[in-house]
Amino acid sequence: MRVLAVTGSRSDYDLLEPVLRQIEAHPGLDLTLVVTCAHLAKAWGGTGARIHGFSRMLLRPTLIDWDSPEARLKSMGLELIALAQDLAEERPDLVLVLGDREDALLAAAAASYSWIPVAHVFGGDLGHATVDDSVRHAVSKLAHLHFTASEGSRDVLLRLGEDPSRIHVCGNPALDRIRRLPAWPAERLLECFGIVPARPLILVCQHPVGPNPHAAAAELELILAVCRRVDAQVVVNTPNSDPGSSGPLRIWEEADQVIRVRNLEQEAWVALLKRCNLMLGNSSAGLLETPFLGIPAVNVGERQRGRRHAGNVQFVEAEAESLHAAIQRALTDADYREQVRGLACPFGDGHAAERVVGVLAGLECRSLLPKRHILDRSPA
Image 1 (cartoon, helix red, strand yellow):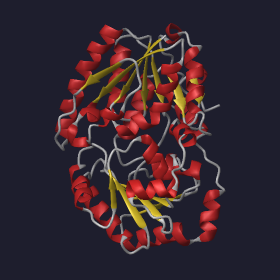
Image 2 (tube, one colour):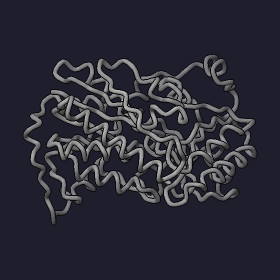
Image 3 (cartoon, one colour):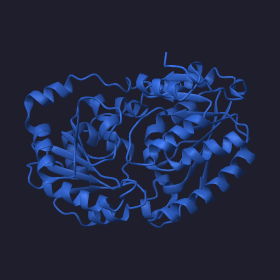
Image 4 (cartoon, one colour):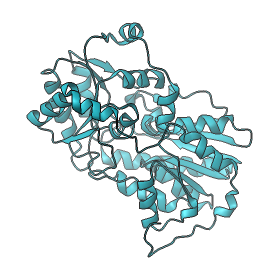
């Protein structure tokens, strides 16, 4: 079976990569990987350069390097044109997408109009404050096969009218790489990042938010100012490529008394995640990855509010005293930290990719067409 997968940013690739590796290695599956959008934009670090090990990759630069909704929409037009050509030339049996970015929406729409079935990873998630929720549900309605991260996400898809026989609860594929990749010894962390073993470590990532994207710069400034009041080492990652990212990117470039990182290889990112004592900001990793490791997370602002999460996450407004109290609790409250370590992870056990590929390997793709919607039914 020929599978065409699409990735446009580090966020979707890091989640999808374990699945892609297993598809690549499977003798009955033939993978073509389309690499596009922010991956190939120098302004956002050119993350496509760290995607390797796949026998067939198509590089499609489409992102216009400008920080506005208009540029994003024009980029989407270019990407749709490229996808139309790729589908016509590659003639895949299935298109595989993940999540809630424009790349997934465009690929799912192009495939649907080409009568090619779509498999969607990470559908049924919930949240608010960004357009991502609407995009995620739109992709789910275009998709013919679903791989969800949790039972709760399955229930959402059922309420949206999806066929229960086409929904598979597999878990979060990002946990596969966390399980697979090792922690680094203290000596290597010191050598690569200057991280000393005796002090706590806070890992920060703050992205812009839909209707008020330019607030992200002030939010990141606030986070760094509060972190300076805490006895901890601070590692700051770059924001994503959404409109409004130029502000927090400027704050990141000018930040001092912190360890700045950008588009790390997965091995290094997982090493930092396993070493940190707290994840801080509004990255989805704070909700979807930290509970697997028993690490506290503090989510700042509106992004991710309402999204499914474990009991290790504190949600706070972008306000100094509330933020400082949440950080102090996460770092110094021994009872709270012990409670977090004992929590069950609602997003799987680190074996999602093998479940996804197991379904794909036994699939008769044409049986997925046409799509069937089941309405007026409560979740099973």
